[in-house]
Length: 192
Image (cartoon, rainbow, N blue to C red; front, side, top):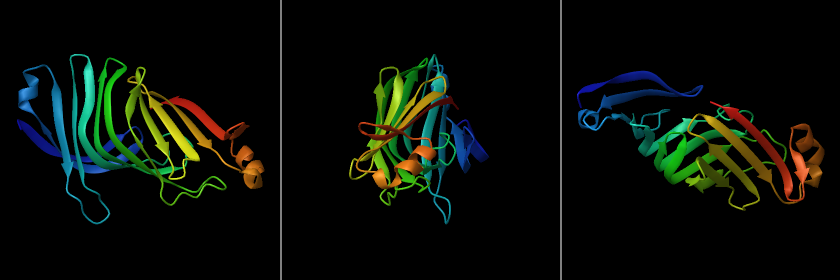
């Protein structure tokens, strides 16, 4: 590595990942890319982190990402506490997703009535049109969350709660969910 150092507080949007070691790959410079290797060994209260972030010639993305990302507030009012990324590879050309693979696990904070998912939600990332799609589902499949992220930082979310929720229907409606034929839905759009 031609340069290596330490980032005291790496942030993603408004979310702090914490301190990580970072190094610049000199060989990538010859092909017009900035490529940074990020890593952190695990310790009490600090999960391990590895990722390669690159940008250049109209491309950007991440490779071999394995990390925990605090998610409270990252996507507005969604009841997500943390994302755990496993073997994530994502590539964008311009604002268009061209490649995505890997697994995302999400812990769910019980801020919505009737939403108790101790196993969280899990899904495999993929490109959906020009956006990155993170399709998460609970073990039962009754609760789903689709996150669609564009290369320019725009995103949309769709949380759907299926099954019989009549006992908590007024509370879900008060929390902003709309009742549909398939259950209750909460949708939003914003930008990082």
